[in-house]
Image (tube, rainbow, N blue to C red; front, side, top):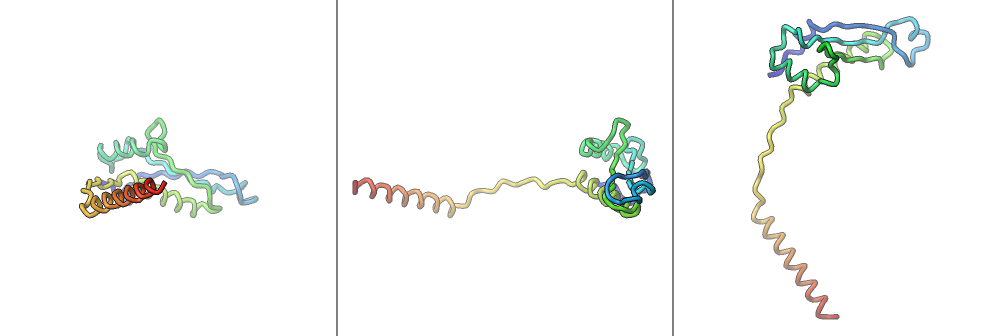
Length: 134
């Protein structure tokens, strides 16, 4: 079962810092880089099964203390980076809890089998005709 992302937002902590890249003087003055931190281990909203799924599927984004970290510094404003981080967070949670449907094997239809055999027979006839001419 997927956790409610809106409830999880109450447990999220944001951290801002100066980011590199474009922005001119803005880069040197303003903290536009936004880092989202969610302590998965001590979350009150997530149950044990949900914690296990997140720890397993998002292991690359979780540090040694069990904190999920997502960073954004693409935009030149802190607000846009915060929105980008939240969107990325929602997307990651959706992907982590997405369960793919099992594929059901289907039988090859009789018409397909007959067509294949008919084509094989036609090809062999063509090749037999080639051998008789030489």
